[in-house]
Image (cartoon, rainbow over all chains, first blue to last red; front, top):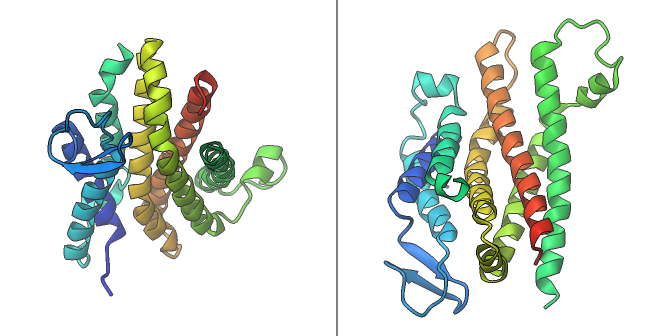
Length: 103
Length: 162
């Protein structure tokens, strides 16, 4: 059975989630009107696209790979002492990227 | 037709249970950090509220968080098709943004759960101040996400429900 490191999973997920979100979203998108999934840019005539499922899936896969590879290595000291730092940074980055809705 | 309101109701009810569990736990870890040596920690209502076995909440918080997020994920397409266009028509850009923030922070909260679980599985050491700090920080971060998502969801549902 595969073993994962919780600390690495959270750190890698937050970092990859931020990167995917900042660079225009995930590759995989869902179109709720037609119930279709699609890779690549939004398809015309399919209604609104939803990126969240794709973001979660892609960041989750990256985090699983990283946390399985690094499971026996401890987090760097700075992160081990402040394990909330990367999640809080990711939350702040999301707020920054969404600031256009609030101005 | 009835499925979405039922799922939304379940989403809200489980979120209430999650809010209760994580708030108790957050209060308990804060009390552990600040009220060590207090002669009568159970003398006040706040003291009694925080005087719970915080470790015992961890599995319940994880299960409730996952259940809440899965139910939220199931009703999300209905929001995207029925509610968000209404917000846009009403020019309530901040409401769209608030939901986006709720969604992203909710996802980050899900990713926080493995770390949260790891923090709570560690045995208490006699002089492990760093471990306690880490556990407190992670628990408070998760509690903040749960409170924010709960209030945002409640507010948005009041503006335009499913």
